[in-house]
Length: 231
Image (cartoon, rainbow, N blue to C red; front, top):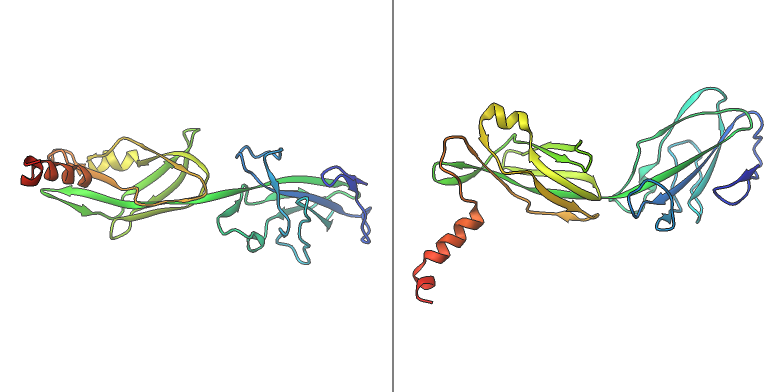
């Protein structure tokens, strides 16, 4: 048959009439719209998690054969075949139901991810203290929770495998209410396949003195220092 993705005839030494065939096009989704277009880059060398899987060619296309007829099969990418550790499949897998002599096509977007990290500090009487088990959320542009994590024993938190885009970083509303916290407004953070480091969050218990963030504290100390007053 004719393979529209590869723009050529599908020719194989394996018999195709008695089982299903899947043609997959892998591409780096440069504009994050999940559709293959002129801005995207076909990816060669990508494999499926399937015994004897070949690799995609320079057009990003991989043909795989002998899918059981009328039986659902889960198709997944072999992540070790992606050359960039920050690349991830946009979907964990597809379910394919093979049909004799039928060609199933899949456009599979690969997205560039990044990381966000920082520390969570709690105002205690007269100083900032790193605090554990604070529940943090990344909210996407659809208002959905895209990622969740908790701060560690030393206050450090990290979001990994974050697809490129803009997010609101916030503390879980349920925890704010339950622990009666004063928390900052959701903060906008943008990831472009990079590491956003040192994105710190400062909180306090309701009824405590309004906390001054460390950066502001340093500014006030500098402004009130004898050196600053003598300038």
